[in-house]
Length: 310
Image 1 (cartoon, rainbow, N blue to C red):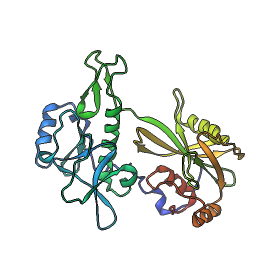
Image 2 (cartoon, one colour; image 1 turned 90 degrees about the vertical axis):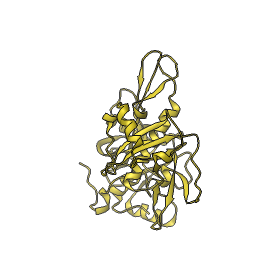
Image 3 (cartoon, helix red, strand yellow; image 1 turned 180 degrees about the vertical axis):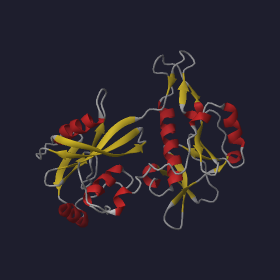
Image 4 (spheres, rainbow, N blue to C red; image 1 turned 90 degrees about the horizontal axis):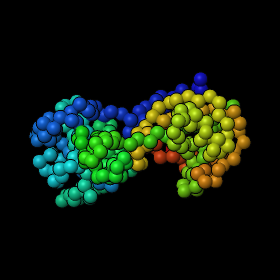
């Protein structure tokens, strides 16, 4: 088993993974009478999602809150109303997919995507937003039946699209992807820079799971393809929803059995082995920029690094 320095921050919840007290209550999605009553209930809250963005309000403590409204104040939409769940106080939540976000008379709210707001929201708000953004993207991208080409219709409160022509049912797409921190026998970490990233931005390796492949096999293959390193031991850590646009990131740590780096030049432009001291110095000098704090990549690196990233 791969072991890491012991520090209390290493096992805090990964952004976007906490339930936030929201019960998705999937059994209600096909109960039209219940959904109608829930939508009309005075405590029900809803919010608009458009192009992966929602409205948020900044708070005095540097965080942000999801802007929600009572259902009777909501902009009109019939088909694109998605039931997200019920909180611990019995409040029902819906997301409304629109072509644009509504304006705000007080100018207190601003549009934000998950990359910007995900780490600033409460666990409840982040869970609601990640669910809504994932559904919205799938709905926008999968409007036609992949079997016969007919336009599909929304069902199950936004969680199914049915084809009226051939009867096929289509479900939200989630693409599994592995993301892994690779270390060697000297306990150095291997970090890489993708070709489209700014100079100095380094993170863990990652890639999509291919058909007929286990997630462990994907870790080994991706490391070999991207940087030419062979992998021995592979250990699962945690997962994270990543709707950019529709991925589920499966986090691993892996031990390399070779250290020679041969970048593929297509996905990875540069890769380096770092000791903890070398990485700490590179952070301090600005030579290396850490990955986004919202990503599970940051947490994987922290497990090895022994402290939160700057």
